[in-house]
Amino acid sequence: MDRLIIVSNRLPITIEKRKGKLHFRRSVGGLATGLISFYQLYDSIWIGWCGIPADNIDRKEKNNIEKKLMTDFNNYPIFLSRKDIRMYYYGFSNKTIWPLFHYFTHYAVYNQDFGASYIHVNKSFCNAIMKIAKPDDVIWIHDYHLMLLPMFLREKLPHAKIGFFLHIPFPSFEVFCLLPWRKEILNGLLGADLVGFHTYDYVRHFLSSVRRLLGYEYTLNLVTTANRRVQVDAFPMGIDYERFANAIYNAPVKKEINRIRKKLGNRKLILSVDRLDYTKGIPQRIEAFDLFLEENPEYKEKVTLVMVAVPSRTGVEAYMLLKKEVDELVGRINGKHGTIGWLPVWYLYRSLSFNLLAALYCVADVALVTPLRDG
Image (cartoon, rainbow, N blue to C red):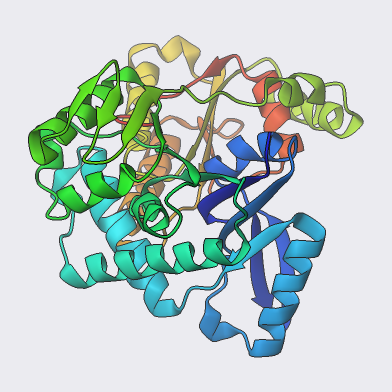
């Protein structure tokens, strides 16, 4: 395969500035986790935001970041200002697109300044790609933050090989029509040669919107636009199974397994791992566990719910309110059912190391996965 350029909002490396020093660490986001194994198999370069506001670094630090990311990780950083982060990321991406595409329409905010920032940042990504792209490169764009990017790239690189994959649902026509920028988003995605979704339902929703809003016909998932053809299909995303399956034989993971089992004793473990997001059904699963203990009191002190909630979008009000709700629910159920020697819910509001996560998966008797809507 020719060189692969992966483009996403965030790089798989996150940079933090603490006490005047730059620190580099692996990102824990689902997209980075899902793609990193594939990325490492090929001659690849990854383009995305490095996680630190451009306002926080000077020119020398910026140059050092670029050099280290390219030399050590083959990553090409995009630098976003605080305003970009507020308007494009927290604003349009996560206050407009995210809730609407997950059918939480009451959370969606429609703001012209958000939309203008989204266009501006997508053009910035386009300009960055233009600096490093070669004629035979395959450009693979990811997720809802960059849905205009395929169109901008197509205008500048008419013969480029461009793919796009959406990692969240694509909503029904009726819901999608609530978006004031609906035609712009469709035209943006149709700049790609191949547009991928997780499920055939999302493919059908997209094709329906393309036909009804833009007037383009399609046959066998092949959309015919004014001057091009675009393939649309479903590609369910998996996990790196071998990495998890082999991990339980590693000494650090075995140590964690033994520690967890010693702490649990004979109790059963129900495991819940998610970003703290209103699409994941976290309050509902806590309430379900509460109901389970109420209706089956014989299971008290015999089962523990380990709930890992990874902090997410802490600058968005809906997420702040969700954290408050979850904190209160956990406190209530532990106070209601707990005893001196037993807490019903172990609540971990942080990301976990791979070793600890693999150990929890190994020890768990039940995995509790209850999204209300998900990719």
